[in-house]
Image 1 (cartoon, rainbow, N blue to C red):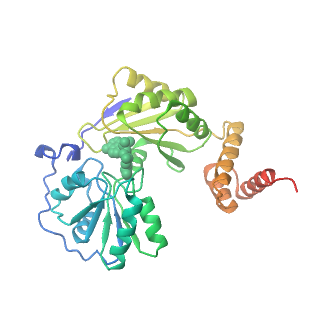
Image 2 (cartoon, rainbow, N blue to C red; image 1 turned 45 degrees about the vertical axis):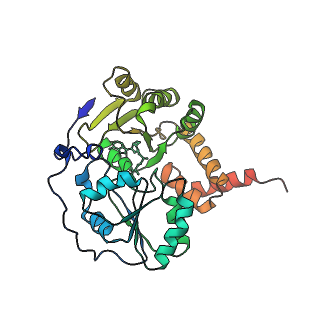
Image 3 (cartoon, helix red, strand yellow; image 1 turned 30 degrees about the vertical axis):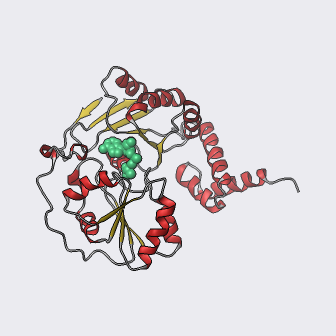
Length: 322
Ligand code: SAM
């Protein structure tokens, strides 16, 4: 089932320059900057397509900081100009994040306030920023989030799928083999799976999902959310794939794909595989046993003591004979 819906104020960020789509409210005057403190890094979420989703606090903080680190300065300018934000901007992208981190640490130590934004949505969520945040936090600099839009959470909230447990995957590997391997790892998880996908890969991605997970799971594809051509397709995976094939879902724009998790209760064997895979991945990442057990309790039907026993048994299995 496809539901298309144009938001009442489709302030489409991708159509800046076309003032028909700008929200009527304009922020010409600076908002008082009492929310900005010296020496703090603010991680500021920005809209994913609709300028009217910018929060008042995001505007105030961006107007009040000394420097704004952004993925692409030209892209950021469109947003910043709209809200009369004229502060200094510097580029921070995946290729210069490490070097920029040292500079930002220096500015914070000197008492300047710095904001981090990405091209859209929440920084560090499938976007640059986590390295900067991690290193600055390690150095003892305060880091404060200014929350707002995130495509994954927006899509989940409108999906109707189970939101008690969800797994945010972001982008799958682009190559077919890696994508299939990753999907096999995700298949047994009893949690709603959330993916980001680019328009030129959406068809191949959904075909791979159908091949690895079967056609019967419920799925929701959110396209162009908050923009003029917002649409949601809901059905089982086979129906969603068919909607792409018959052109009902255009292969243009931005996509979030959500897929119902494995039905753990109906398939204890599947859950057993999921538990084992999850433990192996986390043990390989050297996650502490307590954390692994806690995740197992949250993501599977195992009870706390069962999860601890399973982790201990797995760790013992992996130890070399003494
Ligand atoms: N940091 C962002 C966030 O908080 O959502 C995500 C950045 S990631 C590089 C961009 C991906 O997010 C797109 O390829 C698409 O999968 C998803 N996305 C962003 N905006 C969207 C929108 N308006 N509708 C649907 N998906 C969107």
